Image (cartoon, rainbow, N blue to C red; front, side, top):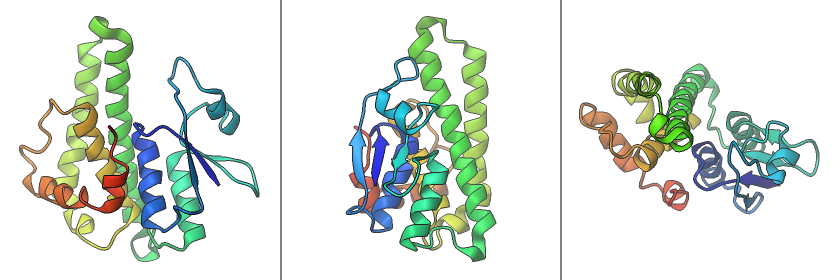
Length: 199
């Protein structure tokens, strides 16, 4: 299998962390490309008609795209148990919350990168408000799950927090969330997180 990816993408990072945690590194080739929303790489379009990454090219079927779909597929073939039946809906909800946080964080990057000085402050504020609510939910509702056995919910949350540090380091998400900050400090030390940290 071949993963069409860019190391800076937080959506890609989720898949890359899962690959390492599930013991699939020898079965998935990581193929790094350069692509942007305004200049989409041909490899991305060939694997996904939307031109988005990540996409997983398979020998035995059509390419799979969307990080959540890829993660479910890889977890299934590895039998890694990162979506345990006993807590499936909690894992999926936590993963979706982290994904929504990422959507807002990435949108903020695009707004400032492509519009520069013309970036619309009310839009940026609205996106950060969503991020702030998700962070508050992680702190108030999800710490017991985050502290439990490894799941895809934890991986998604860890990658989301890592992306905030990477692209929004000027905003102090840790200040009023000491328990979440402490959890992330430990989670970020996992070898799979260290190996996939964006530079």
